[in-house]
Amino acid sequence: MSGLLAGKRLLITGVITDASIAFSAAKVAQENGATVVLTGFGRLSLVERIAKRLPEPAPVIELDVTNQEHLDGLADKVREHVDGLDGVLHSIGFAPQSCLGGGFLDAPWDDVATALHISTFSYKSLAMAALPLMGRGGSVVGLTFDATKAWPVYDWMGVAKAGLESANRYLALHLGKQGIRSNLVSAGPLRTMAAKSIPGFSQFEEAWAERSPLGWDLSDPEPTARAICALLSDFFPATTGEVVHVDGGYHALGA
Ligand SMILES: NC(=O)c1ccc[n+]([C@@H]2O[C@H](COP(=O)([O-])OP(=O)(O)OC[C@H]3O[C@@H](n4cnc5c(N)ncnc54)[C@H](O)[C@@H]3O)[C@@H](O)[C@H]2O)c1
Image (cartoon, rainbow, N blue to C red; front, side, top):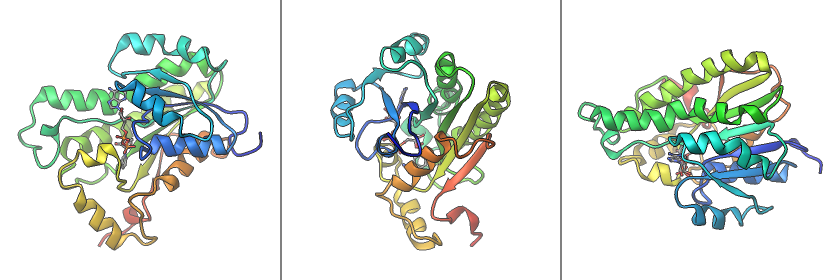
């Protein structure tokens, strides 16, 4: 098959609905020649049903990124479907309700710890779990929401994303010698299940619609998916520790 990702074997996490950024990434990847293996969290039969809507049905492996047994067993389970990996997408985020929607000053540590475990630390955990399959060279990609600024209602998720952006640079530092790149896509607001769980998310929607120089479609994850696929491809061979904004240009403006 021809295409930007021809011959590439990709592990894609984070599909839960067909609005998931990961679903769109898997679709664009397959359309561009990649072989895709998915992981799903919790509701496996739902993820399997969604996976059937891809151009090519993709196998689904169970992965809770906070479960060490799942992480330890991941490489063997992936090997049942492909003989190695060229790229991995981390499209995972979660914070308990107390951490979002204006609760910054009151959220208890246990809840913040959960947010950081799932949304920040797991970027490294996933990369390490996939490492035995990547040989010499590969691309790890994750998703952030511009963490250089404090946003209303994003609260501890913003702190988790700031940590993720730093972890991205440290992963680039520690895996560079093995030819493995680590990069993030900083997406504008998209109407996914994760976004719906943030009380007050509509504030972002209005701001983006009003101010993005290129305009912004909240229900179209494809521009984000394309950037993910570009970073997973051979077309960014000397780029690592980077954050690529796919936000209609919103980040570039002051007022
Ligand atoms: N939607 C947006 O506006 C937006 C903007 C920028 C960045 N992001 C980021 O994009 C990524 C994907 O989110 P999305 O918007 O596609 O929403 P989504 O709800 O479709 O995906 C989030 C995924 O995280 C998974 N997940 C949660 N806990 C997990 C765990 N313990 N182990 C494994 N997986 C777990 C869920 O199963 C789900 O598939 C997240 O990192 C999110 O923060 C989203």
